Amino acid sequence: MSDQQTAVKNEFRDMAGNLWRVELTLDIARKVERADFTELTNVEVSLINPSEQLLQTLPGNRPLIFALIFLAVEDQIEPQLGIDPAAAHEEAEMAFARNIGGQALIDGREALKAALGDFFPEQATAFAELFATHKEADARVLQRITDMAPRIREAMMATIDREAAALEAEIKAEIEKGTASTGSA
Image (cartoon, rainbow, N blue to C red):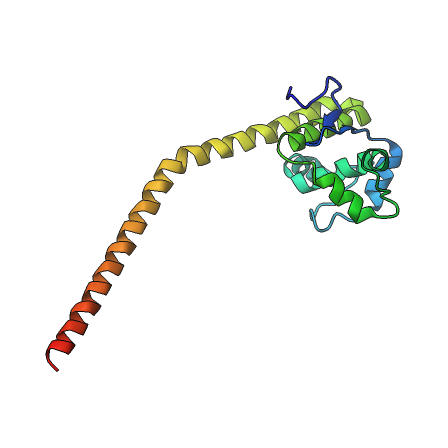
């Protein structure tokens, strides 16, 4: 559990220390049904009748996770940030987003996972497994990148050395050419 996370599984703190409770209700699920997520995914987003494709892609789609978290905490925005999302939706979303990053995003994702498990108690284990699988895949990708870093660095340095040598040879040839043409004149 991170320093900013609370003991309640579906709550998290943003980078400013605001406490957010991520709860999914039928009302919020209906908001999700009406929302336009086409900029975030080509998968139909429905919490009332989630597709297998949504369940497979949701844990790894950070922008979609953020959008769902925002919808789940939207009624907390005005009391916490002083902005009415109904009157100034984009401003409220940006004010919320300003304090979500790093550990707060990770904790928010965990809170959403818990809220999904609460909303679909029969599928709580399946949601936990899906999120765990994505977390494991993310860790594997990061480890692969870390493992490749020395080889990437070596290849980059070799490329820089070759390009520098070629440029040096080209400059030397131009200088000799210029000297030769000046000397023969």
